[in-house]
Structure formats: structure tokens, C-alpha cells
Image 1 (cartoon, rainbow, N blue to C red):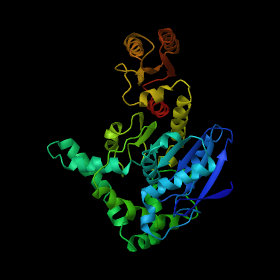
Image 2: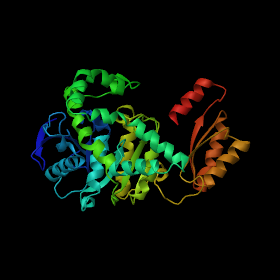
Image 3: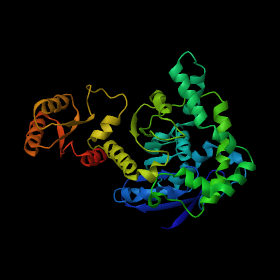
Image 4: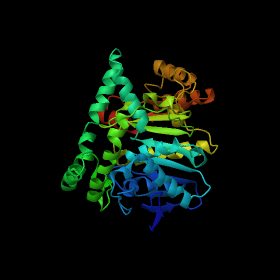
Length: 385
């Protein structure tokens, strides 16, 4: 994979990498801290057949140049870098984007700019809310102690990101990070199989240089009044429910700022590009294909925020004992309400009859032969569903 360089607005050189289907629609993958373009190594093979895949090293990471001033790492500069990359590699074309962590925060900065819709077809955000939206959520929540749930959520989220204050200390933070980067790496990806973790050879430098991101953005975003930054581009947020840093409720107000929004909650931690590459690749593909005119996948319909639906409409429902009796009638009732069904039973013949009755009614059912008295079989079933 060859490296090419693009010059950004402040003359910072950005290292860019391209692979995949040269005739396919372009998807740009943007990483955050403390990563480089290597973050996406598990995702790229899942996109490469359909998409022209473009990824790049953020300023201060990988093979890109490292500006000396902390102010050069403001999110506006990250947005400028993205603009420079697509102007060079995709002139006059609209691209799909998936971004993670601070890379996502930089993309939020870009998609709120005038004219962004002419260059970005869709934006999938992973564990990186807009700085202004995040700040507004925390600040407004802390001003409302008379709303205990909202207040506690705001307080909790502020606490989960309190480490950023330490990361913002000049000189000391980069020095300590350089000394302890390898230990930090082990902590960050704990629980993820080693073969699924992708870090480049420049990881230590990337982690240390990335302290400038916190210094340039953390206190600035938390100290300023939130702006009403609206986004007209189709946006999909991947909410990692087990993310220790960005809590799920931070996204509850996103629909206030985004006119076309999809939200997918997944059981994953912050580094879902490592742990769940297939989920991310599928999410991007389904949204891109739908915007290109293809009928929306059921999962995408379930994710669409604000879409009118029946009580169980577009919901995935599992019904055990569906081969007869109450189980079958329950499955038929859910199907009438628009649910997608996983029907299971130990009786294969009865199960096939249930599926046969659901199909003509316009429902979708997936049969699964299951003995609920077999604990291991039930665990396998849960994993597959």
C-alpha cells in the first residue's frame, strides 16, 4: 500500500493511504487518539470489495508531520485536514465517512460547516461526539439539579472524562505518556483478543504527540458556551454501551442537531474498530447502500431515529417454543406488528409450519432448532442472535 502526501491549510503534511475497489464509492476512515490509520486494519478488508477505501494519519500521528504548537491540534485543523484529503483524492465527489474518537470529533466540526453536504454523503460516528454537543449536554445537565437523572448523567460523564485535564498539562503529560505508552496500550485494549488489536510502529510517538489534542480542545470546549451547530448530512452514531469514556446517554440529544439520524447501540467498549469490525463495516455499508437507493435493511430501519413505527415495528424479537401453541401465536402477533423474528423450538416440523404462516403475512422469520434444556446450546443461540 503506497503512501502519498497531501498538504493541509497550514502546510501540515498528511499521509494518505488508498486501497479497495477503485471504481466503488469512496469511504474515508478517520482515526483518533492514540492511533494511526492502522486502527482500521480489521475493518478495511470488510469494505474493500465494494468501496474505494481511503484512510490517513492525523497530524502528529503515523507518517504525517507533527506541528509544534498545541493550537495546531484544534478540531478546526482536523476538519481542514479532512477537507484537504478529499479535495486531493476525490475532487468533485461526495464521500462516505466513518470516524472514531477524536477523529470523529473533528468530523463533527467539518459536517457542521456550510457546504459540507456537497462533499459528504454520510457520516458514521464511533465513540466521538461533537465537542459542542457534548459540552452542551454536560453544562446544561449540571445546571439542572432539580432533574436528578439528567444531573447525575451529566456529573457522571464529566467524571468519566476528568482524565483529560491531566492529559492537557503541557510538557509533563507528553513526557509521562512517552514513558508509559506501552502500559497504557495494554490497559486500553484489555479484553480484546491480541490478534484483533492493530497499532502501528509509531504508537509511542503517536500517544505522546496526541497530548496536544487534549491541550488544544478540552478546556476550550468545556469552558465555552455551546453553539447551535446543526447538521443536514445523514449521520449514523455507533453507541458503544460499554465505553468507559463516552457514556451512551451523551447521545440522547443528538437528534436536536441532526435532521437525519440513525443510532445503533452495540455491546462494545471504546475500541469497537478492534472488537467489532464486522458490525462497523455492516453499518457503513447498509447506510451507504440505502442512500444510493437500495431498500433499507431491517437493522437500519430499527436504527432510524424518529421513524414512525408500530409498537414492535422493525424490532428483532426472539420467541422460544414457537413451534406450536402460545409460542406460535406470540410469534404471529409480533409479526403482525412489524417485528423481525427469530423463532426457535425443539420441534423442527412445528417450527417450519410457524415460519410458513409468518411469511404470507408479510413477516420475516428466521428458524432456529433449539433445546432450551441444553445450557450450552442456549448460550450458542444467544451469541449468534
